[in-house]
Image (cartoon, rainbow over all chains, first blue to last red; front, side, top):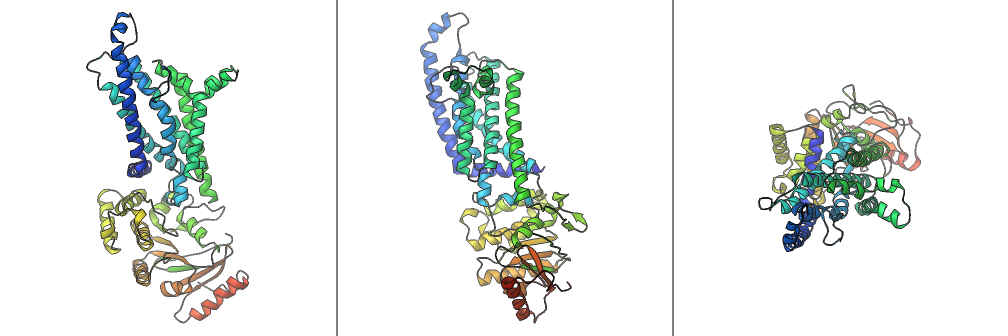
Length: 261
Length: 229
């Protein structure tokens, strides 16, 4: 019950902050722009595409590219995954660092909650916000589902990939917030780690390193598989591993802070 | 902190006195469960808080120094949040909130954001959060800071009322007058150690003042001025 009490309070605080609303408005507006551009491209090439046996359809050209530009190339306007790299650190930065600078962190400790429940409760609140945000982004391509043939399996796999990406980035953000003394520092570190994880394989390739370690480390590699509609245990395990390690680090840091003061 | 041993009975008001940096806030944070001591135990009715932190949550009300609040939440939301974190739900929470809002006259502020409250209003809200769940032990860290004389009188009235209802109260301050006005026992901390612990009688003010200055200025050794509680 205490985890739910933390989640409820954190969610209320999240929705009370203008930052969450501003981020939601800006990103959804940008995603709407991307949707219109993708849809325009799809409609323009529809006749040619119809003639191709097994050619790409609405899901390949609009649905999945809405979620990420990994498969389509061309960065602007950003897909959900690219936006997440920026907005998740901004959302998570205050989770614990903000409490620390505000002096409210001891209130959580005095409520008799173990550090793990505080971290988990706050993480769940962030995830609820992010799931809602993802659902609104997905609503755009899904709004035309009655008039097109959707590949539901591929879209579900891609959505799962995005959900796991959001979950991993949120866990990293919470961990950074647990270690940082100020929210802005937490956001900077989380952004750096997120970008590094997203592009470590590309950077390694450009530097001439072809080790499989970089591909395994890269978030984009695991997300790409899911965006292609392939749900692999190894990819899901990577995301789960990142989430568990990040939340464990945050919990450990918070517990140590309660011990040390 | 070292060699600190205190015992408090129900209905007793203990004033924890000391200069800035004496260890008052650290002691209170440990009692409230916000900090874990390296060794020792903190017990209420024989039950150890450190081993069972959930007991501290239900049995202790804590007003930290400067009453930290979440600026984006309203007064009413603060009370709800603190109530839920302390195990109150539904009707019990609504009744407790109603009672404390009436007692501390927070009604007109109920929908105001904590971030725009004055320091006095913040202290009042912090006190309301500490009292909401009807704690057996009330821990107040410099509660009279930044309060005007009227607010200080109101605070003392609440302290006396709570003590009469059987709540044990620990109140930290660096103001001697605050201790003699609101407490029936005083403990003086200096450099993390308990230097003095004694009941207060009506005519003790001058003697207490001298003791406090002796300890604060010259740092009399521990035990030199200990009296039977």
